[in-house]
Amino acid sequence: MTRLLSHKTGMTTMEYVILISVIFLALLAMQTTLRRAVSSRWKDAADSFGSGRQYEEGVSTVTTN
Image (cartoon, rainbow, N blue to C red; front, side, top):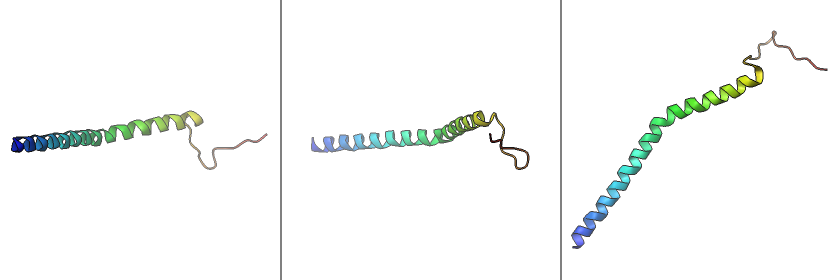
């Protein structure tokens, strides 16, 4: 009976290891997609400030009142 109980404990531990490994691999696979989504959001926010225009030396001007 003790041997069977020890075997079940080992199986439970292995199931947790496999579950954590699957979750880790899923997050690793999603890393690129998440990075692109965040980058796109930052770009959209930055473009909205300058109407899509970037600073160009000699061309862009600053006006003061």
